[in-house]
Length: 315
Ligand SMILES: Nc1ncnc2c1ncn2[C@@H]1O[C@H](COP(=O)(O)OP(=O)(O)O)[C@@H](O)[C@H]1O
Ligand SMILES: [Mg+2]
Image (cartoon, rainbow, N blue to C red):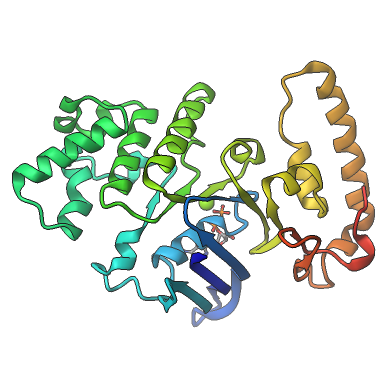
């Protein structure tokens, strides 16, 4: 059973211009997206920069106004309802960002950063709060005295741990992780990802894991949605996306994952060239006359692709 459901979500930003600064057009940042979240599962949201991934995340937690469509949390319509800041919903859905340095107040000590949601949502005594902060630090593998330091005194990987500690402080159901490791070195990326997996099991968390890189989400996600120009071009289980991609955009993203094996690298390069040629020839088959991604059609019970019936199978 899903606890969070998004139906036909649209977020359109007005573009202003002209002498009177009137609205002359809209950016269709998110344009008709459906998602459902189950407990304990990880959902990947992948697409190139500007495809609308962050906007989906922000619309879910209410940082961005929903133009149309609905968000249901445990059966209750919560679209545009985040202004009730202390509601159960804003406690249950937390977000972590790529660059935690700019999302933390630089003049706040780690203790106060982590305790912020606790002070908003739980009524703990000073001593209980201190105990909880130390417990959270140990959950994310940081020493007790980290609480007295400031964010800039930590490395990027440690700061992401602090962000995670803050996000899990009040036992949320869903954490939206917007490119949480994109700014980190490869070795540190793996550490943070493994660690996120571990605490997922401990807390029964669900993740919406946002990334521009299909390689990064590969080991994290149960389900993956591929996004292009505000719409989903394909969605399915991890296996379906990696082993039988249907949409050419998914295939292009897959072919862009770097390979460490040199012989495979040459193979990949060739495959990538073929795909690019095919894409150049058939672009019109994948998008309608306005360049808009088609509606999703079922491939299997869990796999959907925005493709015309005649294009199924393909390369
Ligand atoms: N506050 C905003 N006002 C106007 N346009 C925006 C705003 N935020 C994002 N956009 C536009 O919406 C589109 C999607 O942006 P975003 O969701 O940030 O993409 P992603 O996270 O996939 O890189 C982009 O074209 C971006 O320029
Ligand atoms: Mg983004």
